[in-house]
Image: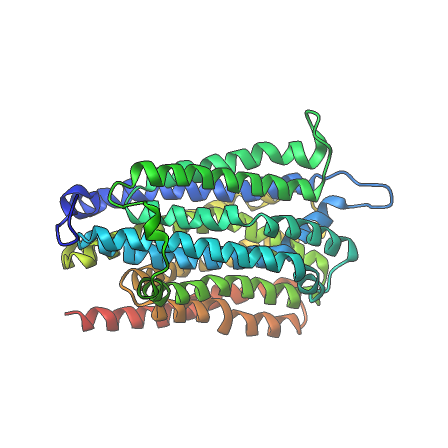
Length: 462
């Protein structure tokens, strides 16, 4: 058995494979995984948009899309805590493995699973009592509120699948086993896609469950991903001792995880709060604009998730080589991470601009809703180049253990700048057309701040 002081770098590709190739080999599986997840989100919304009308209910599909838009901030909050905790795990796990400290890495993994169980229990409890109160704060049609309540209740009751999978996913990624985490992610997403029409419309003998069917398909896919992630962790993460004794809570390790994880959680949660705030302000205009924003947000995930996939590869590579004190490989990883993220977001922006109408027409939307969805794409994608750099800088700060700087960038680009602009534009003429400019403006302003912080960081390490 390898002692804590022995080096394991020779056995880990993050220490030896050329950075350019390493970014591709680790990044592409993650991008594919995230792309499938984004595809699932769009397919899920598509099947909901096609729900047939019921007696006394016209436009069931659009009500369903509105319910998904209202529910999305809560789902993003669950993801925020799971992913944020995972970022802390990923960073310190990779650094510990880079230092050759297998004992600490194993305790980090055990405490990560413990934290995942606690987080799941919290959201299951919240899901039983707080859903209606949350949805009531948004000015939506009663039908949308009812659908949102049914959908969220199921997703939160069985939230352990999503939250615990995010933990196991980061354990695999932190050890450099991105292909394994990708297989688990894709399998769950594909199962979800297959189950959506079966459970929503009632096929092959399954009763039609409408919006509830979409929720059940989601949680079944998440549990499937979790089961595969657990299997891969125990069979392939040979650098980590997966014995039960490592599940014992360790205050020092938990504190270390959350020193990075809490800023990451807050950073991810800001996305939920931004969507919640935007929903409330847009609801003052109309449900149509809220639905359009929800449709756009699902569409843009194709591009953002690809950038996040590359960022998920960047974090362990930078953290591992930083732990090894290899300055050149660390700097190369930052440079290639920025280059690839900018390329991804630029290509995504061009594609969305070119195919905005055909993509929006996939959904069964009314004319006004489709028009505002296309307009959102046309305007918001203008800020994707700035967003790419912001996302990369956030990942670099997380990898280097400076989660507060990463959080500050998020606060600017998601809360401090866009929400006041959305509010301002929503109170003036042509609000439905102008409100979308808040997002590219926010990305540009935040990038100036992020670039200055990164310059200071680089100068400080010379």
